[in-house]
Image (cartoon, rainbow, N blue to C red; front, side):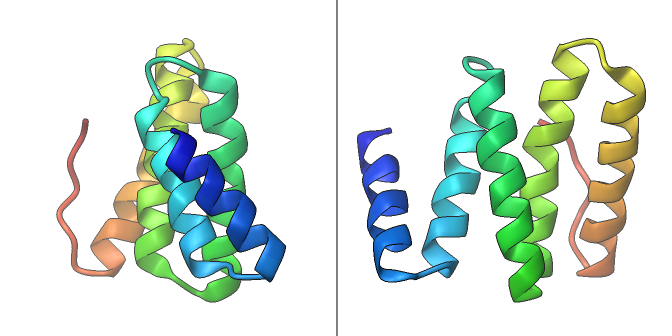
Length: 100
């Protein structure tokens, strides 16, 4: 996690967004079973950055951990909405829809 945190800090310092967004996604993916608050914060920020960049692949990846956390915390309606958004995004880029 130290390297991801360092990547995010350095990217923010120099104004780089592409790798910052992917490092944020990586944190949300890795922490999904350990730190739900961090997943939500990192995942939402990654989602926002990918959205501004128009990166649909990044959007698809970034939605998934948010859905997983909502599902694990019993917020099934929010999770279903996010899983649906992720599935639509994956289909839109020709990807396979799956689950963790």
